[in-house]
Image (cartoon, rainbow, N blue to C red):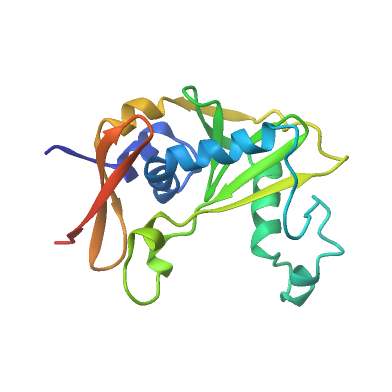
Length: 191
């Protein structure tokens, strides 16, 4: 089984995306695409708090010290101010740091990919695959900016590979090809 280091893939692509973000996409492709699809349906409604690009009224941001933003507004700010992004020509989705995103009409859908090194307790499939979607509807946001650098790649090619990514101090995560909808995974001990 030939393994390709996700860190090397990112290095070659020369983009500002964390290796775990691509890995989470491979593990959750079908689910991620379903979030974008749901946002495109006429009866779609945002459940929970409604976020805008302006964070001045955000109660969670106000509790943070200094210039820190809440997790949701950090993702929004990153997406809106990115310079060097990756773009999957297969799914027409953008990637930047921990975020996977796309404009759907006048809605911005962002999938935040937390790193599994943050997992507490038992390592489970649900915890490893964890992603957090957010949809922003804001009259001040009707389209994404034109990014300075866009690095193209094809996720279908990655889905056919065994991609290895740093997981924590003890393990690395390897994606196991299943089909074009996503991958399975396993952990191997770091040397």
